[in-house]
Every structure is written in C-alpha cells, then in structure tokens.
Length: 628
Image (cartoon, rainbow, N blue to C red):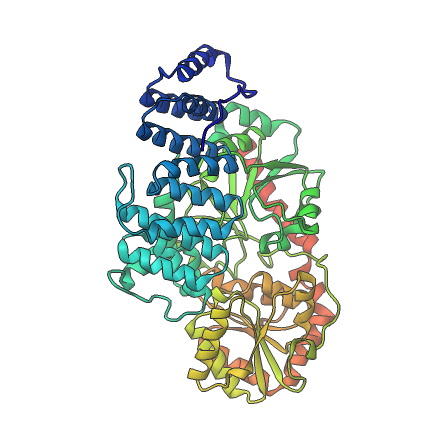
C-alpha cells in the first residue's frame, strides 16, 4: 500500500517550536532526517501534547521514497502508535496494516492493530489479531521483546475483551494459558479469581501448574476479597497491595496552594465536589440522584468531577441537571484533574468510587481538597493516601472495626446510605409472568453472582430443605453461573427445578418485581446495598447476616433504620434457622410486608431530607475548620 504524499494539516505549533518544526519537516521531505532523530523528536512533540504534529512528522518522513525496509517498518509502527494515542484509530489501523504488509510476523504491530480494532468496535477482528500472535506458528518478529511476553500480552488482551463481552468461559481459558506461560502475573491472577466468582465456580481458588492457592490469595483484588471474607485485616491487606502497586506517592497538597485557598474563600458558600465515573445507570447513580437535588443551595455549591459514560438515560440527565457545575475529566490525566479541583476551590471532595472498577485514586493522592471523604462506592477501607474520612453509621463501623480502617468515620445518626424516593416503578407483575408458583413460599436473592459463595449457597440449600414447599428465585446473569448453581443444588440434595432464574429487565420492572417474593435472602460477607434499599422500598423484607466488616454490615444498617432489627442475624446457623422459621410461618412474612407498607417509607431509612441535612452538617464543620 503506497503512502500518499502528505498535505500540511491545520496544525498549531507553539511559536518557540515553530522554527524547529519547519526545519524538521523540510529534512523529512528531503530524506535527510535520520530515523533515531525522527523518533526522538516525535517523542518530544508527544510529550508537549502535540500528537498531531508528531503524526504529521512521521507521515512526511514516510512520504519520501528510498528508506530501507527495516527503517520504514519502525517508522510505520511508531506512526501507528502516535495515531492511536490521538484517537485516530481508523488511520492507525491502516498504518499497522502497512507495517504488516512489509513483515507479516511483526508481533507488536499485530498486537497494536488489535487495540485499534477494539476501539473501532470490531470485537471479533480484534480477537483474531491477537489470536494470530498467541497461536502463531514459528517465531514472531519482536523488536527486542521476548516471545513469551508477546504471547502473554496477546492472551491477556483477548481475555480482557472476552470478559467485557461476558464470554467468561473463553476468557478464563485464555487466562489459564497465559498464567501457564508466566505464573507470576498478579494482574491476571486477580482477574482469574474474580471471573470464577462471576461464574459461581467453587472453589474460586483453583490452583494449577505453578499458580498456587497462596499466589491466588495474595493477588486477589479488594472487590473479590470483599466477597470472599469478612476478615477486616485481609480486606485491609488487599487494599494496601493495590495502593502500594498502583497509587503514586505525593508530597505536595494542592489544596494548600494560594490559588486554591483564594478560590475556597470566595463567595462564602461551601463547595462540595463529587468525584465519580458512575454518575449514570449504575448502583451509585441510582442511590445518589436525590442527594444532589436536596442540597441546600443557600449554603452549598455542588460540583461533579465526572468521567461517567454518556448512557443516554433519564437518570444521567437528572444527575447532571442537579449539579451547579459539571467538570468532565475524561480527557484529563490525573494530575491535571487534581489541579482543576484545587483551582475550583473545593472544600469537601467526596470520592464515590474508592478502589472499584474505573476509579482514579491518583486524583485524590494529590490532595486537591482539604477534606476528602470516601462514600458509598466502596463500603470498606481504601487505604488511599489523602482520603481521611468515610461516611458511616455506628452499625456499619463499630469500635472493633476501626483499627482496620485508615479513614476516620463521620457517623450519621441513623443510616449511612442515601437513596432515591423518586425511583420509577413498573407495572405490578404476577408470579405467573416470571414462572413462579402461586402457592409456594418464594425466597429470593437478586444480588450479583460474584457476591454468592459456597457457604451462602449451602445455607440457602439448607433453607430449601427446611421449607418443603418453597423455591429460590435468583438472578443469574450468565449461563455458567446458572449451570454451576443447578449442579451445586443437586449435589446438596435439592431438586434443581426449585431454583428459578430471573431475567434481566429494565430498572422500573426490576423494582416492581420485588413485590412477588415472600422473603429476600441476603449474601454474606458482601451484603446487599442498593438491592436491600430497593426491596425495602418496595415493601419486601430481607434477612441478612452481619459480620465484622463494613460491607458485611450494610444491610443490617438499613434494617435497623427501617425498624426491622429482628431480621439481622450474626451466624450462618442463626441465619438458616430464622429463614426456616419465617418460611414455615408465611403469616410472619406477611406481617413484615404490612409493616413496610404502612411504616417503611416513613422510617428514618427513607427520610432523605434529614439524611442530607445530617451529611451537610458534618461537611460544614469539617470545611469551616480548614477555612479558619
């Protein structure tokens, strides 16, 4: 494929660099610019955020005929990399294909081609590009990289994309092959553990080859650890590993800079900033929508520092409309985003993500606000430097939990969790609509599959055995989880037909169908959060087990605030016994429903104006202490 002679694009190069830029272009056109200098200046322009200039320089150099094929190959690869960095994925694809036309075994070009195809939404083509690397026959041309590293890179990219496509079995198989080649990849082990949780493949810690149980345990992410144990020391260790490996250590606190201090003092209002990539159709967005609307605008100015996906939902629009100012951080690096927050004069920065998927903890490490608070997205300690506080209540964070938490608690009087009283509810469903028996006692759990584990499922099977005319209504969001749960039921002596699987439905219909079960069964140690709020709002009781960690006490907090503390248990045997007692006495479940219908929505749990005032009072005290 020939490269057309480039035309000068509409580029703006800063004046101090303009003369050098023109000279480089002239030498590139004439063929007098050596490849090492081309690469050096290309890197320089990229470092100055002048990626378009770097791309044009490569394009100009390649338009001159006469370079050696090996030099052209390197220049094409670098040009493709620059184009990918500036989001010109279609052009990058073309350039990588030109490189592969010169050398079909050029592994790095094929790996990067896969990335461009993924960005263009061509999933199968991307997987095919990576497959050619990891299944390649014979040696690949590697430009200094080792063959094993190239193959594991291809395995891992394909596994990641397959996981995003919910093709969990294929993804897991590629992770095993990658770890067999190199058993020291902690990031891959982390995904291997979590993908087994998503499929309800127990035991989750399935060792193979040189990948031992101990290695898997050490590599487990904090999110996966929260589902695996309620030991706060182990949870703290998982957070510490992440922070040590991924979070930049910062000595300078941006909030102390004069520009930040001046901005915070202007206007008098206390500025609250919400930091999140989940201000959309996500559990955090669903819970917090009314929080932003209810803030007292006489005292507070509300900012969103946001990198959420634009999902086009009415919820997303509502959240954005409730903010005084929305700052989009998608295209900013963490340091730039932190400077923006500091310059905006934010008094209280509320981190709604912690260490969950898509989080940007390095923004917080720069300390752009004097008060930085963890809330809702991660109901556990994050150990993030710069996050000094966590919103909680005395049920979720009892005194014995505090030694395992780096943040200091901000105790709300009743319950830590906000919710939304404007939730849209679908039409009343029928049991027949969801293939539920009319005359059976219906237990239910709509928690995500990764929150289930062998102990919880074993308890559920004991409950079904103890309540003969009962079924268990579950959310299984993939075919492997469904098959594994049926197999586990049969192994426990329970007819698998007593498991009934709920399909995914729109949020209003999801809420409406909470009216159908008699009793919701919570998971442990990863309790229901949004799900517990939803079922109690809809008037259906939930039975929980509370443990030692914040996340294993979330549902108990909600039940305490709604006025049903007798649905809190503290051991697996007590949990099973209480569920069987209720299942054998359906009138008891009906009495809970009557209570929730008559009193639930008027309880402290759903008194959103009061909860928001409680939060504001705490934030005001902390903010003013730093303004004085």
